[in-house]
Each structure stands twice: as structure tokens, then as C-alpha cells.
Length: 167
Image 1 (cartoon, rainbow, N blue to C red):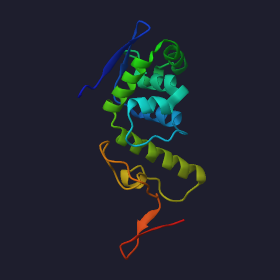
Image 2 (image 1 turned 180 degrees about the vertical axis):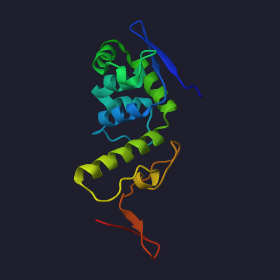
Image 3 (image 1 turned 45 degrees about the vertical axis):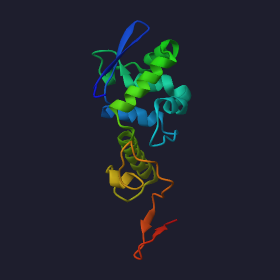
Image 4 (image 1 turned 60 degrees about the vertical axis):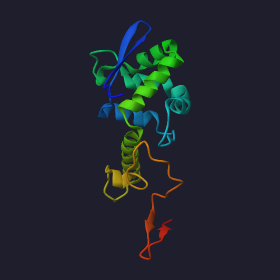
């Protein structure tokens, strides 16, 4: 499915979903700050993980036609979707979100942003990195990769070819 935009009729009003823009990435990051999202996730699992944050998530993802992201009334949209969006539409929104925004790419971006914010908050003197190499556990992967068992963000190869972890 190579569609770049999806439309939904909710409570007799039209809403549009497009690929995320930077402003939405910041909103999503804030919303899911305390939620651990696995790399390979489907719409049902995403809905379960979001739980009561689902109406706010859909308010971030959907916009009335012609409305700029900065001009959206997030509180009003959240309440509109809480009262009028059925689960089938919510699943469509999440399916389309995943097709418009490959989750590995989104997680990579969110991880980078969250790592930078944590470093800034703790006063780290290390340079902030938003590159995939600086933010992902073992480089980049696609949404089709199998999840890695576990990896430490601090693990590294030792000169003898094994790996060791810094504590």
C-alpha cells in the first residue's frame, strides 16, 4: 500500500492522516514517554499499549482538512475521538500509521530524541547524537527484522573479538 494519505469520517466530520511531521513526532514522543514500544508491533498491540492514551494519540495523528498541526485543538480532538471513534476506526488509524511511518524508523527517531533529552537533563558533557548509530542498540534495522534477544547500549567488542559490557 503506497498511499500517502488516509481519510476517516468520524461523527460526520472528515479527518486526514499523513506521514508524521516533526511537530507530531515531538507530540508522540511526549505521549509515549513511559510506554515501551517493541520494534515489530501491529495495530492491535499498539492499541493495547496505548490504552487510555489512544484518543490523544489519534488526535495527534489525525487532522481536519486544511488545519495546520500547530492550529489543532488537541483537547477538543481528544474528546471528540474518545466519544465518537469506534474500535474498528481506531485499528484502521493505527494500521495506516504503521504503513505511513515504518515503526523501526519512528522508534529510531524517538529513541534518538529521548536519549538526547535524557543527556541534556542529566548534564552530560558528551555530544548529543540524533544519528541512528548513536541511538539504536546495534545500528539500524527494518520493520521486517526479527527482534534481538537483548543488547546493552553500552556493550562493545573487546580487542580479542568477544564482547564486554561496561557497567
